Image (cartoon, rainbow, N blue to C red):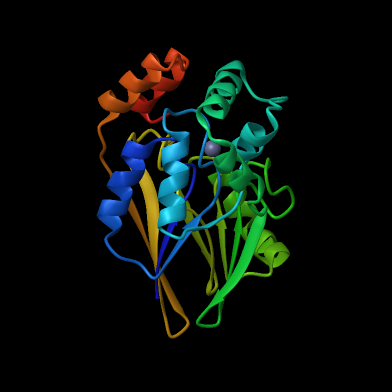
Length: 229
Ligand code: ZN
């Protein structure tokens, strides 16, 4: 089984399409939330993940776009939530609303759990690499998983604890680890053996930033794409 795992697309269709091209073929596609928010193409990104049959969970930006409630968001993120919300059809918003906050599945005997934030706080807790290293064992235990996949921080990592793994594929549409290329992971499961490949893909940032400006999205959100931070 070949699994495509990605997170935090954030309405960046250009980056998503490059990732899908780079990934080639897969048996199962997983999306760890924040399909929308920040970027210019929320509706098109939802259509892509639906079209490709992604197994998706909700992120904090998906929930905010559904409710229109941006308490706790910084002003740039909040402005983008409201613009994204106006760009979406009712059908797309209803689809976002139905997304679960977590998913558990089993692939060839490997128990896989998905959360946007963490098992303790599925939508909002940030597990950055430092905490991930310290608490990997406890988080895997809490999730009851051999492979725990988290998103939300936009910072990729892969931590192995015995034969279990805690991973964050990074962000497709707004990386924040200093590398502006789209980030995702390919996971091979063969006879219960797991191997994970982290991949980075270039995309046309100029084109995305330009459309963000045309839509009135905050300049800060457009320019940060160039730094990957
Ligand atoms: Zn995010």
